[in-house]
Length: 112
Length: 117
Image (cartoon, rainbow over all chains, first blue to last red; front, side, top):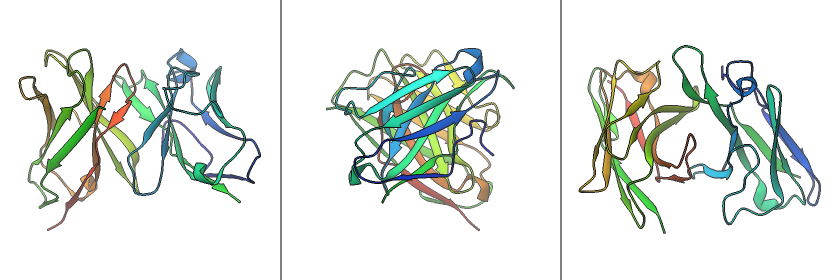
Protein backbone atom coordinates (compact mmCIF):
# COMPACT_ATOMS: atom_id res chain seq x y z
CA UNK A 1 0.00 0.00 0.00
CA UNK A 2 1.48 3.31 -1.12
CA UNK A 3 2.04 6.23 1.21
CA UNK A 4 0.44 8.55 -1.36
CA UNK A 5 -3.04 7.55 -2.54
CA UNK A 6 -4.14 7.87 -6.16
CA UNK A 7 -7.26 6.56 -7.89
CA UNK A 8 -6.43 3.35 -9.78
CA UNK A 9 -7.99 4.62 -12.98
CA UNK A 10 -9.57 7.63 -14.66
CA UNK A 11 -10.93 8.06 -18.15
CA UNK A 12 -12.07 10.76 -20.52
CA UNK A 13 -12.97 11.39 -24.12
CA UNK A 14 -10.65 13.22 -26.50
CA UNK A 15 -10.76 16.96 -25.88
CA UNK A 16 -12.06 16.60 -22.34
CA UNK A 17 -10.40 17.57 -19.07
CA UNK A 18 -9.43 15.02 -16.44
CA UNK A 19 -7.85 15.35 -13.05
CA UNK A 20 -5.83 12.86 -11.02
CA UNK A 21 -5.64 13.27 -7.27
CA UNK A 22 -2.78 12.42 -4.95
CA UNK A 23 -3.64 12.30 -1.26
CA UNK A 24 -1.06 12.25 1.50
CA UNK A 25 -0.89 13.28 5.15
CA UNK A 26 0.87 15.55 7.61
CA UNK A 27 4.17 13.68 7.18
CA UNK A 28 4.48 14.31 3.47
CA UNK A 29 2.36 16.65 1.34
CA UNK A 30 0.78 18.27 4.39
CA UNK A 31 4.24 18.97 5.84
CA UNK A 32 4.97 21.24 2.89
CA UNK A 33 7.05 18.90 0.77
CA UNK A 34 6.81 19.38 -2.97
CA UNK A 35 4.81 17.06 -5.21
CA UNK A 36 6.09 15.87 -8.57
CA UNK A 37 4.31 13.99 -11.33
CA UNK A 38 5.50 11.42 -13.83
CA UNK A 39 3.95 9.92 -16.96
CA UNK A 40 4.80 6.34 -17.88
CA UNK A 41 3.93 5.00 -21.31
CA UNK A 42 3.71 1.21 -21.69
CA UNK A 43 7.14 -0.40 -21.66
CA UNK A 44 8.92 2.90 -21.04
CA UNK A 45 10.66 4.56 -18.13
CA UNK A 46 8.72 7.23 -16.25
CA UNK A 47 9.01 10.76 -17.63
CA UNK A 48 8.94 13.88 -15.47
CA UNK A 49 5.75 15.83 -16.14
CA UNK A 50 5.47 18.34 -13.29
CA UNK A 51 8.03 19.28 -10.64
CA UNK A 52 7.75 21.48 -7.59
CA UNK A 53 3.95 21.19 -7.52
CA UNK A 54 3.25 23.39 -10.54
CA UNK A 55 6.29 23.58 -12.83
CA UNK A 56 6.53 22.00 -16.27
CA UNK A 57 9.90 20.88 -17.66
CA UNK A 58 10.77 22.16 -21.10
CA UNK A 59 8.88 20.26 -23.76
CA UNK A 60 5.88 19.30 -21.65
CA UNK A 61 2.70 20.77 -23.18
CA UNK A 62 0.79 23.34 -21.16
CA UNK A 63 -2.21 21.00 -21.29
CA UNK A 64 -0.63 19.46 -18.21
CA UNK A 65 -0.82 21.39 -14.94
CA UNK A 66 -0.29 20.65 -11.27
CA UNK A 67 -1.66 22.04 -8.06
CA UNK A 68 -1.32 21.40 -4.35
CA UNK A 69 -3.47 22.22 -1.35
CA UNK A 70 -3.24 20.95 2.20
CA UNK A 71 -2.50 17.25 2.22
CA UNK A 72 -3.37 16.70 -1.45
CA UNK A 73 -2.19 17.49 -4.93
CA UNK A 74 -3.74 17.18 -8.36
CA UNK A 75 -2.66 16.75 -11.94
CA UNK A 76 -4.98 18.20 -14.57
CA UNK A 77 -4.89 17.33 -18.24
CA UNK A 78 -6.94 19.44 -20.63
CA UNK A 79 -7.66 18.82 -24.29
CA UNK A 80 -7.19 15.08 -23.79
CA UNK A 81 -5.41 13.29 -26.62
CA UNK A 82 -5.02 9.61 -27.43
CA UNK A 83 -1.29 9.85 -26.76
CA UNK A 84 -2.00 10.84 -23.14
CA UNK A 85 -3.11 7.29 -22.37
CA UNK A 86 -0.55 6.19 -19.82
CA UNK A 87 0.10 5.61 -16.14
CA UNK A 88 0.61 8.68 -13.97
CA UNK A 89 2.45 8.76 -10.65
CA UNK A 90 2.81 11.41 -7.98
CA UNK A 91 5.91 11.62 -5.79
CA UNK A 92 6.83 13.53 -2.67
CA UNK A 93 8.97 13.20 0.45
CA UNK A 94 7.85 11.62 3.69
CA UNK A 95 9.48 12.61 6.97
CA UNK A 96 8.24 9.69 9.02
CA UNK A 97 10.44 6.66 9.74
CA UNK A 98 13.74 8.47 9.00
CA UNK A 99 12.46 10.01 5.80
CA UNK A 100 12.30 8.88 2.21
CA UNK A 101 10.97 9.83 -1.18
CA UNK A 102 7.61 8.20 -1.72
CA UNK A 103 5.41 7.52 -4.73
CA UNK A 104 1.71 7.14 -5.28
CA UNK A 105 0.36 3.83 -6.48
CA UNK A 106 -0.25 5.18 -9.96
CA UNK A 107 -3.33 6.04 -12.01
CA UNK A 108 -4.13 4.48 -15.37
CA UNK A 109 -5.57 7.09 -17.73
CA UNK A 110 -7.74 5.69 -20.49
CA UNK A 111 -8.70 7.90 -23.43
CA UNK A 112 -12.09 6.68 -24.59
CA UNK B 1 20.94 15.34 -24.89
CA UNK B 2 21.37 13.71 -21.50
CA UNK B 3 21.39 9.93 -21.64
CA UNK B 4 21.62 7.35 -18.90
CA UNK B 5 22.69 3.88 -19.98
CA UNK B 6 22.48 1.14 -17.38
CA UNK B 7 23.56 -2.46 -17.24
CA UNK B 8 23.99 -5.39 -14.88
CA UNK B 9 23.02 -9.00 -14.23
CA UNK B 10 19.36 -9.71 -14.83
CA UNK B 11 19.00 -13.10 -13.16
CA UNK B 12 20.07 -13.74 -9.59
CA UNK B 13 19.62 -16.49 -7.04
CA UNK B 14 18.34 -15.75 -3.54
CA UNK B 15 21.07 -14.44 -1.20
CA UNK B 16 23.21 -13.11 -4.06
CA UNK B 17 24.16 -9.47 -4.57
CA UNK B 18 22.45 -7.34 -7.19
CA UNK B 19 24.92 -5.11 -9.00
CA UNK B 20 23.98 -2.43 -11.54
CA UNK B 21 25.90 0.44 -13.11
CA UNK B 22 24.64 3.58 -14.86
CA UNK B 23 26.72 5.70 -17.23
CA UNK B 24 25.85 9.33 -17.90
CA UNK B 25 26.48 11.03 -21.22
CA UNK B 26 25.52 14.25 -22.93
CA UNK B 27 25.45 16.41 -19.83
CA UNK B 28 27.17 17.42 -16.65
CA UNK B 29 27.74 14.87 -13.92
CA UNK B 30 28.43 17.44 -11.25
CA UNK B 31 25.69 19.53 -9.74
CA UNK B 32 23.25 16.68 -9.45
CA UNK B 33 22.39 13.75 -7.27
CA UNK B 34 21.95 10.37 -8.87
CA UNK B 35 19.24 7.91 -7.87
CA UNK B 36 18.21 4.32 -8.18
CA UNK B 37 14.48 3.54 -8.32
CA UNK B 38 12.74 0.23 -8.82
CA UNK B 39 9.29 -0.80 -9.98
CA UNK B 40 7.40 -4.01 -9.48
CA UNK B 41 3.75 -4.98 -9.90
CA UNK B 42 3.40 -5.63 -6.21
CA UNK B 43 5.28 -2.65 -4.78
CA UNK B 44 4.87 -0.02 -7.50
CA UNK B 45 7.59 2.61 -7.80
CA UNK B 46 10.06 2.53 -4.92
CA UNK B 47 12.94 4.93 -4.42
CA UNK B 48 16.05 2.99 -3.38
CA UNK B 49 18.47 5.80 -2.71
CA UNK B 50 20.63 8.56 -4.12
CA UNK B 51 24.20 9.79 -4.11
CA UNK B 52 25.61 13.29 -4.48
CA UNK B 53 27.81 13.67 -7.54
CA UNK B 54 30.86 14.01 -5.30
CA UNK B 55 30.08 10.75 -3.58
CA UNK B 56 30.29 12.52 -0.24
CA UNK B 57 26.61 12.18 0.62
CA UNK B 58 24.29 9.23 0.21
CA UNK B 59 20.64 8.90 1.15
CA UNK B 60 18.87 5.58 1.31
CA UNK B 61 15.33 4.36 1.69
CA UNK B 62 15.17 3.29 5.34
CA UNK B 63 13.46 0.04 4.36
CA UNK B 64 16.47 -0.97 2.23
CA UNK B 65 19.29 0.87 3.94
CA UNK B 66 20.81 -2.19 5.62
CA UNK B 67 21.33 -3.93 2.26
CA UNK B 68 22.10 -1.08 -0.15
CA UNK B 69 25.28 0.67 -1.23
CA UNK B 70 25.34 3.35 -3.92
CA UNK B 71 28.71 4.53 -5.14
CA UNK B 72 30.02 6.91 -7.79
CA UNK B 73 32.98 7.08 -10.16
CA UNK B 74 33.14 10.70 -11.23
CA UNK B 75 36.05 10.11 -13.60
CA UNK B 76 33.86 7.76 -15.64
CA UNK B 77 30.59 9.65 -15.01
CA UNK B 78 29.12 6.45 -13.63
CA UNK B 79 27.29 5.42 -10.50
CA UNK B 80 26.45 1.99 -9.20
CA UNK B 81 23.99 0.10 -7.04
CA UNK B 82 24.66 -2.94 -4.90
CA UNK B 83 21.81 -4.68 -3.11
CA UNK B 84 22.87 -7.56 -0.90
CA UNK B 85 21.06 -10.73 0.10
CA UNK B 86 18.35 -10.49 -2.54
CA UNK B 87 15.09 -12.41 -2.31
CA UNK B 88 12.17 -12.88 -4.68
CA UNK B 89 10.73 -9.66 -3.29
CA UNK B 90 13.59 -7.77 -4.96
CA UNK B 91 12.43 -8.87 -8.42
CA UNK B 92 11.71 -5.63 -10.25
CA UNK B 93 12.61 -3.27 -13.05
CA UNK B 94 15.47 -1.11 -11.79
CA UNK B 95 16.03 2.41 -13.09
CA UNK B 96 18.84 4.89 -12.64
CA UNK B 97 17.97 8.58 -12.74
CA UNK B 98 19.32 12.11 -12.50
CA UNK B 99 18.04 14.30 -9.65
CA UNK B 100 18.18 18.11 -9.88
CA UNK B 101 16.44 18.14 -6.51
CA UNK B 102 14.19 15.60 -4.79
CA UNK B 103 12.79 14.44 -8.13
CA UNK B 104 14.21 12.74 -11.22
CA UNK B 105 14.23 14.43 -14.60
CA UNK B 106 16.19 11.90 -16.67
CA UNK B 107 15.85 8.14 -16.40
CA UNK B 108 17.76 5.15 -17.71
CA UNK B 109 16.09 2.57 -19.89
CA UNK B 110 15.58 0.14 -17.02
CA UNK B 111 17.04 -3.26 -16.18
CA UNK B 112 14.78 -6.17 -15.32
CA UNK B 113 16.19 -8.12 -12.41
CA UNK B 114 14.65 -11.48 -11.57
CA UNK B 115 15.50 -13.33 -8.39
CA UNK B 116 14.78 -17.03 -8.65
CA UNK B 117 16.28 -20.24 -7.42
